[in-house]
Length: 112
Length: 115
Image (tube, rainbow over all chains, first blue to last red; front, top):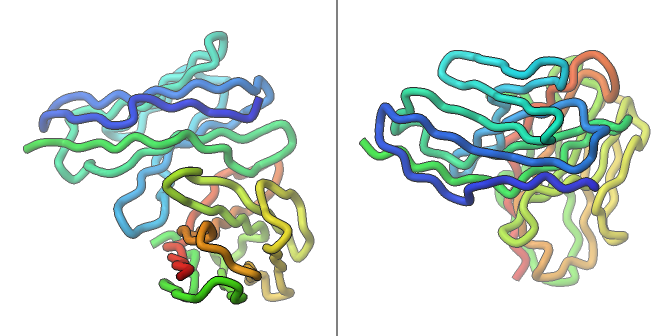
């Protein structure tokens, strides 16, 4: 019930392309869904987050799409750049508990 | 820079030993979370403190303990260390544990190597 499943495990995209990472959750009590970006040797950095009352949130080149009925959410990175090459984690929290349950991560490589 | 600080950055110790990891949350944040990141287990929640009191426990071993002090910094104590405890340990802070702002900001982590 606490799992968050993330796919794909790794992703290679050409510069200027769209990167798409998907996550699915089981616990319907989750009410906060953030995405984190992590570079090697660094801590996870909050990228963008969504609450289930909206189906989409956009911040610059990053968009979260949320499908409450399917219990799925995804991160879209438009115009992907080599500097976006990092590991991306989806997460979820809720049910009176704010600790984050993380997906397994996606290693994104943007080729120039 | 998230505003969360962690020391030390690296720690190398032997099996059976005890270590203490330190975290200072962002200014004004009352809640501190500890997470462990390992290759096989991914990022896992260990324990949360809010304004000095334990608020939630995750997959924290009995050999591990934590506390949050009046100045809101937190320490994670790991004892009787085993090889499998080698991992990155992150601290995150947030303004409120429930309601309001849910954002958690992570520190740079402490890399623990047990030999």
